[in-house]
Length: 190
Image (cartoon, rainbow, N blue to C red; front, top):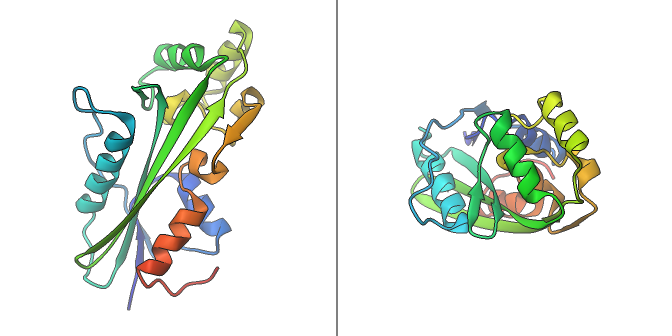
């Protein structure tokens, strides 16, 4: 019996999968160190962290394990999950009026086989006023979000333009995820 294990505690990833008709049999958040290595670039960082999450999840040989990581990058700078409101404010001010990249790496494991894809989107922020930044910080929505914002929430009002996959920016690119699930032999719906 093949089980699908989602190696993420993210409610957004679970929600995206549900929208695709995919219900994991188990959800196990990988506990790994997500600290970037010195000089590490955003895309390799995101792919390394995703693979580390995948390797950290125990499974049976026929189980399919699905892990992902999302990284916000401003040039070569990795903007992870802010540690506090001050860092979130710094991120929002840096993103204000600029384009940035959102990278989501997805990886699957079934037995000894691995599959992986990386989806890259570009997001444009409008210029943010201090009032907008302060109201967003007060909402608490920045907590636990790469780059200090969630496109599917209040920050949608900051984003006039994207190029790429909306679901990838949310944290799990739907098209790539379904392709990987099919490649791994998943027989569910969608």
